[in-house]
Amino acid sequence: MVAGRHKSRTLKRVHKRMPGGSTKLTFQKRKPKSAKCSKCGIELKGIPRLNTAKAKNTAKSKKTVARAYGGVLCANCLRMKLKAQARA
Amino acid sequence: MLFEIGRVCLKIAGRDAGKKCIVIDNPGTNTVLIDGETRRRKCNVKHLEPLDKVVSISKNAPPAQVLKAGEELGFKGLVEQKNKKEEKPTAPKKQKAKKQAPAKGAKQQAKPAVSPKKAKEEKAEEEDESAE
Ligand SMILES: [Zn+2]
Image 1 (tube, rainbow over the protein chains, first blue to last red):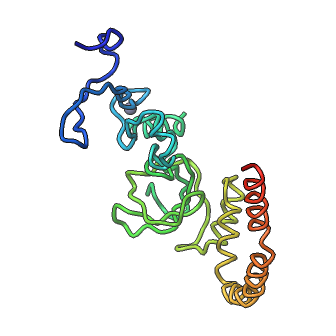
Image 2 (spheres, each protein chain N blue to C red):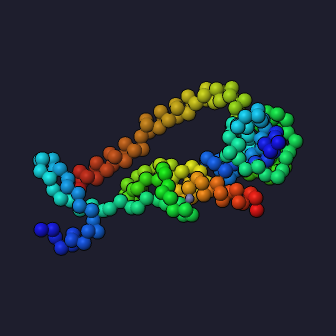
Image 3 (tube, each protein chain N blue to C red):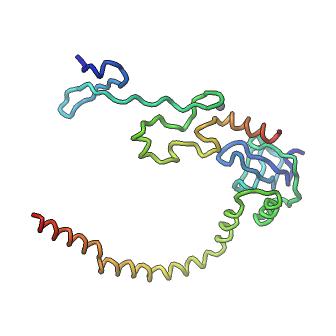
């Protein structure tokens, strides 16, 4: 029987193998949802789903795209945006 | 011709997206040679948005000429490129600097002899001993 505070399913249940060979039920934080393009909503590539602790120890260049609006807009939406600006 | 030599363009793909450039060579294929706010590189015309300006520039114009044209057009971030290109021919000067480097190294070697860190550690040890 799980403890009362663990019944809500806020935390993810993971069976971890212990050094002694037995398995133990652990409760872990869920991964954040993947980054989406703010215009069309498509999943952005090259943006890892990291929790805050892990994200902190990862280089900025590994969490974003080197393009303008990288990590915010997808490549197609940026292309449309820049074209519209140039033709306006 | 849309992408003739001297056409000012906006790059709309890749890490240079949003930066302006000038076409400096067009061999008639899908790719053209560009330079300006972007790096000097070959580029597919699908990745370029032509603007309404055309400047007079020679084919395969040297970086200095592109810089001059870019300054007139109000391109940004050109100064950094200028400095980099000036540094390249002055390679022999760097070798002179290397000769001076051993002197700096000698100073660094001299520092451990003074060893302020070690002195601190010794002090700390003494304090620990006194605490015990
Ligand atoms: Zn999009």
